[in-house]
Image 1 (cartoon, helix red, strand yellow):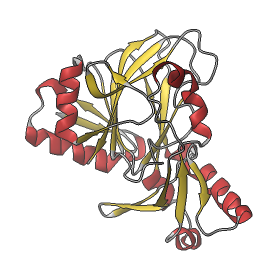
Image 2 (cartoon, helix red, strand yellow):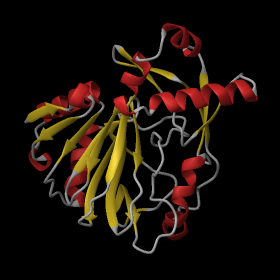
Image 3 (spheres, helix red, strand yellow):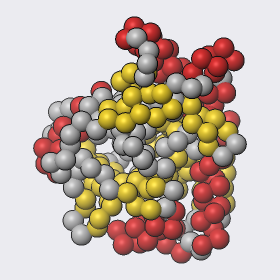
Length: 263
């Protein structure tokens, strides 16, 4: 297994075949995700069964409440962009997955199944880096604050077309509260989801709006980002505790399989 960190240790490339991965190598995968936030792999020609088998080695497969699973494969969500779609791409806008749940998924696995020639990309931003870049005054200010996260936040608009086709009927307004500073191992990360965080608990509306606006702008700065260009059988795994991500505008057909996991 070859692991090559990207610039500023934000993200890493991993060269291995996940179909034949050994148990001791799973720890190397987890350590790489914990260290770099997101890992990128190419040429992963796994069947859905093999994909789930690998995912279960990494964590506990978690149900996604908004969309029906791939038929016959509980835990695999179909993330699709169609050529005739009118709205934004699914997941277009900065967010961290399912932060509106009381127990949020630790990891997300996303695998390219059908990808047009122009590929498209997904952006990732390290929240270890964004937290470290805050000055001490701001770190002290936010240390004990709690965010309110909603499934009806701005990112929900990108689900409309897919929910119309594959919705579970459970897409109520999920609300959860989480500390906005999250400790991961021995490091701290800013835990906010611009697509889901609607307020800071116990702050007045204006103070909450101003603080969130500042932090949203801060956590998505270019210096905290890396990008991944998609192709068939490419795969990305990231830590939702320390990474936020965004699909970029995309026109054409693209189909991916996603699995979210508890640690």
